[in-house]
Length: 167
Image 1 (cartoon, rainbow, N blue to C red):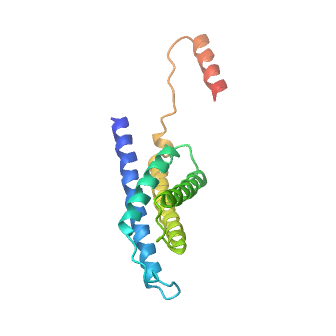
Image 2 (cartoon, rainbow, N blue to C red):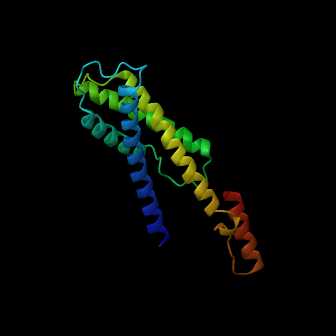
Image 3 (cartoon, one colour):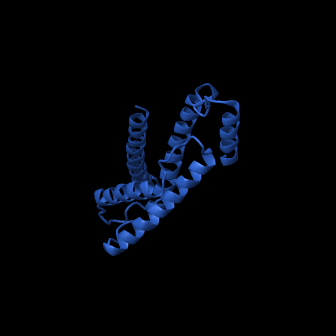
């Protein structure tokens, strides 16, 4: 039962990350096209759906490969944030290389940088909320690292020594 719940939570986290990445992409398009300090798309008609599909595909693969969905139990938030930033930058490099091979020249660098910044901020906020929820759930009263040893005193002390030496 615990394994199924863990699998469900990991998959929900993946879906949330993909959805938040698409929200970050559309927010960056909104900022890029409608704020006065950007030049807009300079008359070039861009196919944002192709970029979004490439982004979601690349982000999903790199985040799975970079173990971004491992257990939060033994990690600090800085570890999670560092892994997030590393995954986003690797994904951006893979996206730029794939766009180069597809000979797609209509993606603005400012749009890509805006997207990267917004994506890191939104995903960091979501990871922080999830980290805080898991920290609250797994307080000391629900700690599962206690062991009951049944047997003779000599045998029990031998097992305790093995456990303490392995930690």
